[in-house]
Length: 357
Image 1: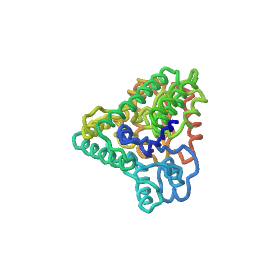
Image 2 (image 1 turned 120 degrees about the vertical axis):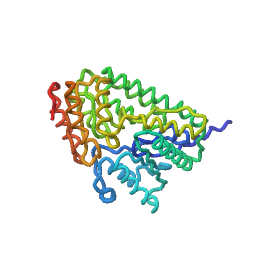
Image 3 (image 1 turned 60 degrees about the vertical axis):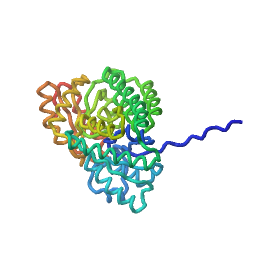
Image 4 (image 1 turned 90 degrees about the vertical axis):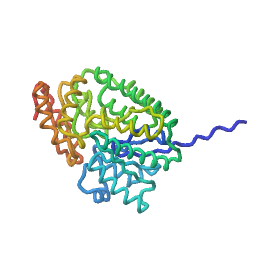
């Protein structure tokens, strides 16, 4: 009788933030799992005191880690893509040193902007990332594993490209698209593809007013679902849990060093982020995305203490108004204010021809 082959679980590496190239983690033998938090929920006193005044979603991510929810991870990478995430890293590094966190923690600092010096710095950060993940998994990253990872990751990129096309055509809701992105960031590519297919099969959005979402990132579908229940659908967004997520981008390279440099160049070409880009860059990208999605208007939600988005809105509103497009926004949303903010936003959007303030 032939013995059944033993399946060895693939190590899971947690990611806080959106700057980690998934191809590197896959090539180093890991499944990247993004820790996203939530729009609502209690935050423990310990997490609140350790983090201080910061975006509530980041506090919920920290709380999940402290509670042991992610103790099965082999390691954790924290991206320096927001002030809140950087504070989370410093807290977790200290706790890991004291044995409170049962896995190693690594900072990934990859500034935007591009240029020879920035790209070189980013490439070296990717080299450090690869070494960290390989140490966690025991698998060495090389040209062969990078090539295999590229095939797996590219399949996700193609699937999400179809998701974007379907939502723009009105055949897929914004909440379902957000679930597809979440699946892609929290599962192995093969599992994510099946989940993305299942989400699309169970969606029938109907005729809704299409809008474009800007401002804070959305860790779950709370706001999107509230909008849909009122007849409004998010046809696209510029936050990193949706259309601006870094998923499906891969490079072909003859060596790991070449791959790190090529990925650094791709990173420089990513859509401008709310917390790390100029308002002019954000506005230009927003105008292009509104045209791409055919949105009737723009909606903006900004959480209290989320760095960046608030000061974008004045310039964005003016640029949109010059093109006959309205922007409705709710800012400084408190920790458990998602439902109230969605209701206020819906009230502002009821007259689509009016530029809401």
